[in-house]
Length: 225
Image 1 (cartoon, rainbow, N blue to C red):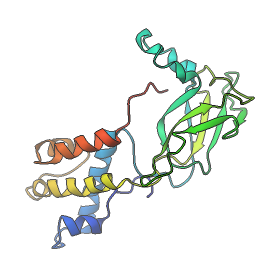
Image 2 (cartoon, rainbow, N blue to C red; image 1 turned 135 degrees about the vertical axis):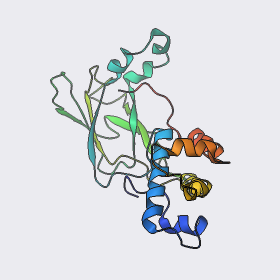
Image 3 (spheres, rainbow, N blue to C red; image 1 turned 180 degrees about the horizontal axis):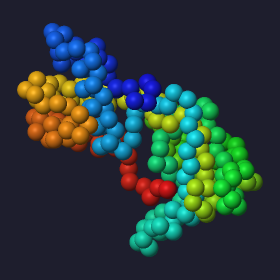
Image 4 (cartoon, one colour; image 1 turned 90 degrees about the vertical axis):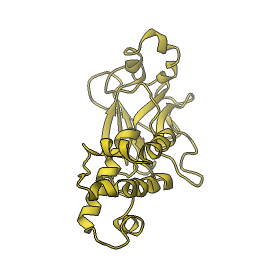
């Protein structure tokens, strides 16, 4: 599923929410888009994936540590060798990691996966619900790095970002929220990204649905670039 696509189809929505077919496909698509972008915002991530590789840059480990309060530094010391990413990586296909070793804003060193760095969690792609990769770790025996470069914007990652596939509970939550909010919309309540939060808060089951999704799929707080 490409980035920006709704996590449930118009057909799935209408089968569960509007079996009479009275709502136009365009209205249904707009409603699903609003709900999915709301889920993205609440979870701090998106569950589709880029259609092609994208290039993003991140701070190195020491640059992150320098912005932490002393209380958190001991907790985050592994940031020197393990770089937690603020963006999910959907697949290692097309993954390229480069580093700027001398702070000249040129990414002159290309790293080799499983030789210079690992991706984690290591078994993320396995099992009944594939997960994205969320961190990069320096291989201790590698010859290029012993820690991530200490400077801001010193790591460049080229990857397909997002999730391997939309999790079933996220798809189900999309349909359930649509069903919860249909009466509000029919009474004149317009669902947009700006208004959906208020609509969810007054729907009978909306808060519980959001709580469960955020609890199970929301991004855990890390100290990112």
